[in-house]
Image (cartoon, rainbow, N blue to C red):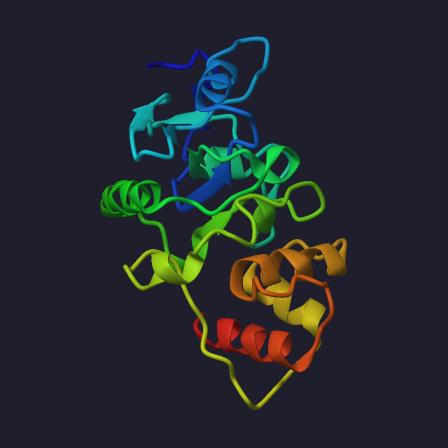
Length: 216
């Protein structure tokens, strides 16, 4: 199924990001209809339902409208440089729940294909909340980034005991927009310390931040 909500990428744009979302709607059908509704002006390259079925909506070569106002590694307009994947999940508004094994397996297979086609570094495999921390919280704290990293998709830091630097500086170095430092820290915790996303720069969070920066 093809969505009408796309446009050509800007001349010279390099696809170097993979952004993962949840749909945050009450059903897969509702999400699919919205992603294909011209009036909604939103889309993604792919939609994966909870049974693991993948629907291609926008050609990878084209610019889908999934990230909105966003920033990563000091560059706005994430849509122009990214592939967007939506995972069917009711989200925090309608009954947030874990992502089923079949859905995660389908995502891993799809992501491996995307990474084979485009020069996307591991640090640029991110969630919507990573690139828009003041606006978004998906795919959220129940999304298993560690499982994905174990399969060669994205990064997973080891805590680094020798702590260097303030949280905001470390977040910016990794790639976060720190206009709102606490929102950026919560986004980092959702990704790398999901058991406690309190926005506090405690010792565990700082150790993970240092570990993440050490991987760059």
